[in-house]
Amino acid sequence: MKHKNNSTAIPNYQLKSGCLMPVLGMGTWKLTGKPCEKAVRWGLELGYTHIDTSDDYMNEEWIGKAIWGLDRSRLFITSKVDDSKLHRNDLIQSCKETLEKLGTKYVDLYLIHRLNPTVPIEESMEAMEELVKRSRVRSVGISNFNIAGIQRAIKATQVPVCNNQIKIHPYHYPSNIVEYCKKNGIVVTAYSPLDTGEIVDDDLLTQIGKKYRRSAPQVSLRWLLENGLIVIPKASSKNHLIENRNIFNWNLSDEDSAKLTQSSRESWRG
Ligand SMILES: NC(=O)c1ccc[n+]([C@@H]2O[C@H](COP(=O)([O-])OP(=O)(O)OC[C@H]3O[C@@H](n4cnc5c(N)ncnc54)[C@H](OP(=O)(O)O)[C@@H]3O)[C@@H](O)[C@H]2O)c1
Image 1 (tube, rainbow, N blue to C red):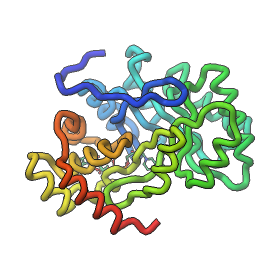
Image 2: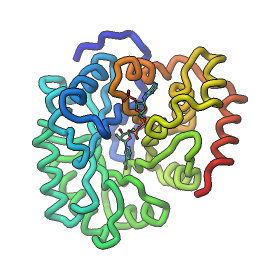
Image 3: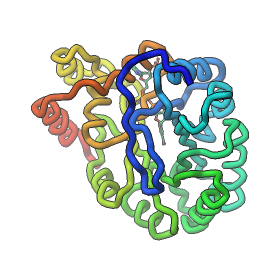
């Protein structure tokens, strides 16, 4: 794969499965068709290697076009199975379709998108185990799970639950879930790290960013990284992809980090 930039390499977290997961990925919700293909290609040129998708984003085949011909071992692809497909056969079939659309033999991480109370988690996790055994899935995870759900998922399977993908940004920080995951060796991914675009002009983030000549989105992403999280901002614009890529060669001061932590505590009503 060609990397046209010289920006700092993206570090990884090691998952319980042993796989390495880059701490910055490209979110792709609401990106479809040619704009999706184009954005993913730009991201790859900028050195992103981690792509986050889902069976219900309607973009897996466009991501497949963007990654076609690349060295698969250098990519980290996450997909998710919808909560309407959590019975064994549906889950296995859904993964098969995901792999066909992406044009790949395996996904690096496969997540249960959200808990479905009408399907026993044991059945879904058994199907996940089967996919790992068949080398269709490298690591198994969950998304939108609260602590009770995480406990059930862990209990339901022999394979390690490696990742929980949940909504996190400086004004929505479910610290109890984050801490529980960390204690249990589950790496946490912050989805909607820019609150789906709502905090890109936020006053506090902008004010902090001025000191570092960084934008509000960069401050949010950097703060999340410094909290030990994986971030997957979605950007369809090349400039946004570039900006979000540049969050590694600088740090927030303890004082600024504390301001954001304080604000996140005040705004969290979980
Ligand atoms: N597991 C789940 O249930 C779940 C739920 C939601 C999201 N997700 C995942 O998380 C990803 C990210 O969350 P999200 O899509 O809600 O949105 P987000 O990443 O929080 O925000 C995306 C918005 O911010 C804008 N933006 C990005 N970088 C920017 C920058 N540097 N400066 C200014 N604006 C910027 C984007 O604009 P442009 O597009 O115009 O560049 C877009 O409007 C999703 O795409 C998806 O992969 C998972």
